[in-house]
Image 1 (cartoon, helix red, strand yellow):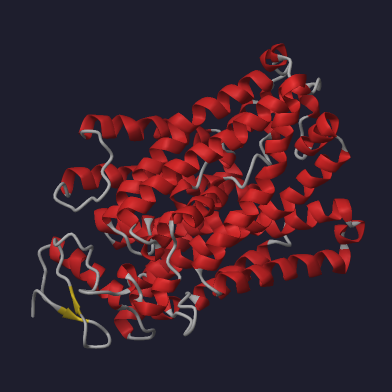
Image 2 (cartoon, rainbow, N blue to C red):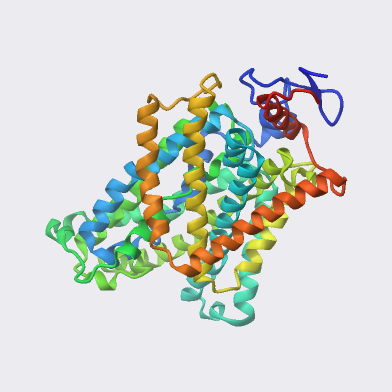
Length: 488
């Protein structure tokens, strides 16, 4: 039987590959609308902009080490130039591939389409581990900021209760749907950015431009570049939710470019204000110095507002990270890389509740550990994933030029190669300066990812677990067709 596949329900044909539909069910399906319930939870432009903002930054919190490691001059140049060599290329790649394949799973689907299921599974492992470890830092970070106001939260049972409450509350928020999560991100974004807008305005008459030219006596370039990388990556995370976006062909490119502009200015303007208005040596610019600078510029009221804003930013960061990680698992289940249980959706809110619960439990467990080397390994794994992502982008341009691309990066193949080579060079640099412990931990996670893939393949062959969904069958059918085997 060729040309048409019946869905698991047996009543909805799947559109054949090559029709520009990405293998989604004809007339609907998860990537195309999720029915009437799903339509209510679709992400529109403004919530999507703020979700991307929180996937990446959440405000200038955490940018201070760039000043500490190299001084105001290099920090300002870094946050001015780095978006052009990193954020914009990654966003352009995400925009094209998300609109070409507007289903859940994002970069996993792209790698699977280009290089097959092993590459898709490895991409999923690298990106999921990286995202889960990063997400685990936010509940603990929230507790640390709260401890400045409520010292009892600093340790013991109160700290544990704070972290657990944070995790459970935001898991419930994610359960209610991406529309709720998105509009919550808008409110959190406005609240966390407002004190920096005020600080920048109040600082204007106090700015002395000569202070921007200062540099650190002893420069820590490793810390400097890691800070830039940490604060300006994960632009592709939102791709895992592409199936939940209204009119992705138009919404995705606009949202990504808007978020790049908002995020870049959100770092650059507060740094210009604080370094120009406050006469402080680079050594004082540790984490949290923005609050101290705001106190110097405007008084304690703004200092406390920025500290509260840091808590709100942590909430937005965790919520966005949890959403993208959960929908990544759903997408991997749709592809048949994970059991069907990860694609189960809640009856009322249509959210992937199993994937949300699993991701929430993993991040909660990690929240209680100190794992500096594992965090460094997470960045290494993320870099591996991005190298594979850039290779996927170029490969699909070469091998699938006929693929429908509602948004297409306006460059020919040589320009595409240059677009990807520049950030790839930086990725290789970041990976090269990692230590042997990072290499060892990354190798273990990679081996574990391969082990999971072959375990799932074994379980599928023996019928031990249930695999496949409507979307998964369509995408797997397209994979088989490309290999010349279209019978099912």
